[in-house]
Image (tube, rainbow, N blue to C red; front, side):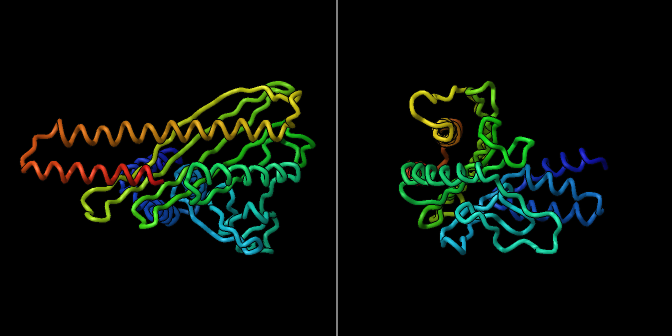
Length: 293
């Protein structure tokens, strides 16, 4: 089989498996591909970077703060903390290639972005959950002297209900591309992984993911007293806010409203009226689970 056949077949298989076990399914598919031949490493790496899985949580040893792990802050089995800029566990010292780090200039913006989106998390996720932001240089220069050359990054949010019945993971990958001296294009790809379970009955659950893209252009208002860093954070914050709002409404209107139509209108009721009330109660609990995230 060619590379394209292996990659497309793997994605097709993963789409048909239970989304609640996507992490285990992805590991199984990657192991199966690796056992086939040593030449399949590229397919495995592309699968790991293309398939979104629920975010993992680790704790930064130096700062004591929790942070989120994804493919964008990973080096082998180590993950970089946005708080200390260190990898845990420490990468293999025998490796000739050092792990990737943002430039000094971008690192300063990364720290401000983490503080800013932590405030966003506190406001929009009712004071709970975890957020992390990771940036990397998109310019050819290893140490750019300004942010005018553009950059890329990812904003991560994770929230779980206290009883574990609801889980929300959102992954926002963005790219800032210069258009002119003070004008930039912002491209955002957002993926939300949702898992809702009815703890009272295992017969009703909702799991899956949804991906949407947004793009906008803006001119940095440097004459208003705001520096370029602040302009970038404002634009990115507004874009992430809009994307999460759109996806949340889409989940509410399409999935839950459609579920209600199917259960109460499209399907013929064969039980008592009390059965309908029970189904209404179950659906209401599912909607409350979404609203609590």
